[in-house]
Amino acid sequence: MVKKDDPAPVLVNIGFGNMVAGAKVVAILTPGSAPMKRLREEARDRGKLVDATEGRRTRSILITDSDHVILSALQAETITQRFLGKAAQIE
Image 1: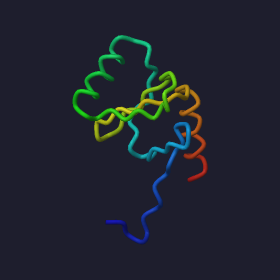
Image 2: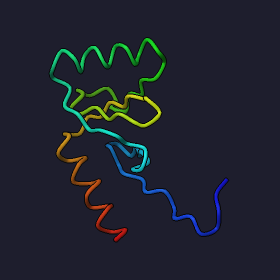
Image 3: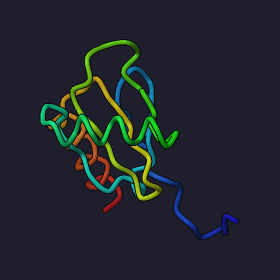
Image 4: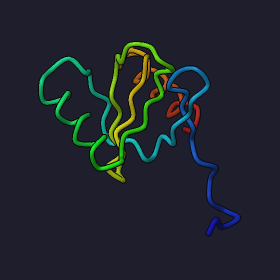
């Protein structure tokens, strides 16, 4: 239930027009290590993997508070800057 005084959710572009609610993201990770590959496979097995890469190489992994794993084709640094830019706009 959305109240009148609640601020609109902050949406951040994670590439190719795909957006994620900024308040729901817990971590932004790089995908290169073996633990990150296991994290991706476990999320796929649980049905909690969201692939937003549009068929391109995965360059970052976002973890949400609902335990979803989101794959993005943008660098983790790029997404982080977008989050920081949105935070500055709110203040």
